[in-house]
Image 1 (cartoon, rainbow, N blue to C red):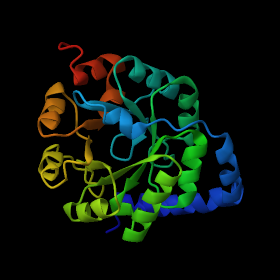
Image 2: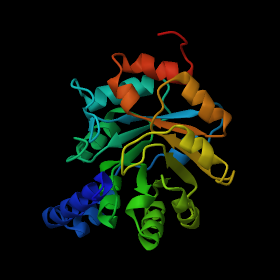
Image 3: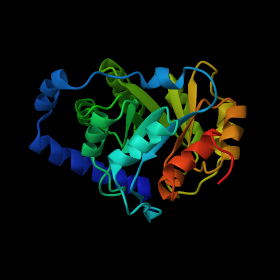
Image 4: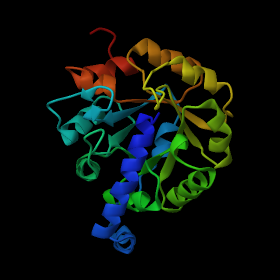
Length: 264
């Protein structure tokens, strides 16, 4: 049976083919000279202290549909910055998540925090798109990529000055993630084949990841107790989208996750 992830990757390859015709990769390479300077995504997360928040700008998902009707990406990013986020993730996939790459560009113009392009990257073309748009980091998902693709995209992202956040769900993919040289590793608590979530998945995988790699817990994080659980296990950052986007008061929700306020 075809999984949701399979459908997304197939659609992504068609999307890239269309984009290449509309804007050849040579034009993107030329536009790199005018891209805004790269900000240190990894350094921001590695600066020590309590667990860091990568707050996500995300309108919808395949499992939940539209998460937030009053969706203003720049306003949301500003709220994140004001309420303690260290970095911001911008969902740029359009068919399945109702995102746009232009959201990242607009946020970059208004917000000082390092930005992650969160999408399903399977081709170098998307790396150039990300950097030209102002991304400081990109997400690479091990389940979407062969060993060669993972290594090549990782190294090319680094060459472009960006931080690759290399994510996996399946435990058997961890050796591949380590082998590609990833310094920033994400453990997705959501199975992208079934979209079931288990927060303990990051805790279990933490024991198998070397201490010199910075670990990010992703998905299923809703409460301050979840953040403290991850922090106690040695997880340095958490990527949170759906919980924040669905909260009536986004800023207060971020404050609660970070322990800046303790009551609703």
